[in-house]
Image 1 (tube, one colour):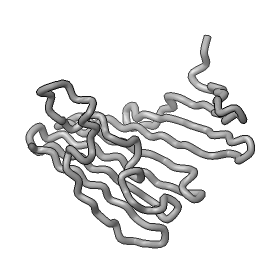
Image 2 (cartoon, helix red, strand yellow):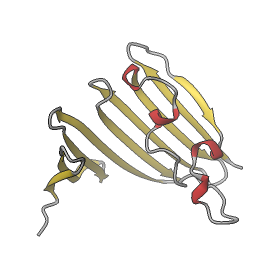
Image 3 (tube, helix red, strand yellow):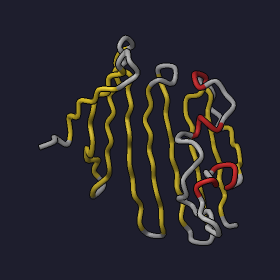
Length: 157
């Protein structure tokens, strides 16, 4: 297989990146594969965030980075996450590189208040090297376990 997968992380107040190498079978959700289907660089991961693969208290981590490299097709995926507020808030930067094309996405999730918990989520993409807002919402966690969403952008008609 031509896939190399690394999860890098930095602890709070630590300048050094720590590197964990993973096999594709450890990183991707193999239960979703059809019979005979092969894992590729953008298959579905087992978890949504790099921090979930690490056996470390999330409040001790300042940054994570997932690097998936396919040496055969020359495609790479890099997802970098920066945490603050004890891991409650984060910025995710995702870059998909395929030969001469790159796709960039940034997601910012901020916990605005605790009781009731309210999250602000914004998603940006790059268009002509300029960040462009793609999505902006507030999500409130209700006492009954449900959520209420107030979408700011794009406005629903």
